[in-house]
Amino acid sequence: MAAIDDARALHSRSGQTGIREIVWVPKSVGTLACELAALKMARKVDRFRPSAKLKIEPWLVEVALQRLGQRQLTIEEQREVYAATRTPWKVNWPKWWVVRS
Image (tube, rainbow, N blue to C red):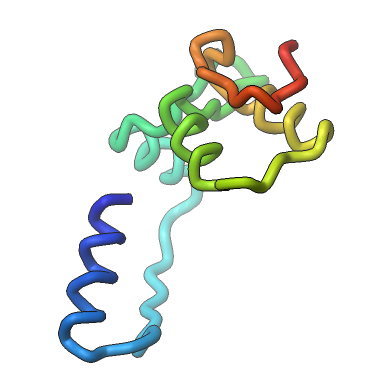
């Protein structure tokens, strides 16, 4: 995320505005889990079972919630985030957060 902010600052100094080009690079199916794991953003839970799921790391959940600013998630959105978090008990949830299980 810091790299994105740095790139935005660089473009604003150079006078460029907006997106000039979008490059689509096809990926083979199933690489998202590997890429997120390499970035330490998510981890596959029960990876040898058919019920394996990709779960988001707690630090990333905290950063995403901080970026919301004053916006608060609905109860249903909170349930989705909680269920998608690898170790939700390690997250420093905001004071307005209701869902705890």
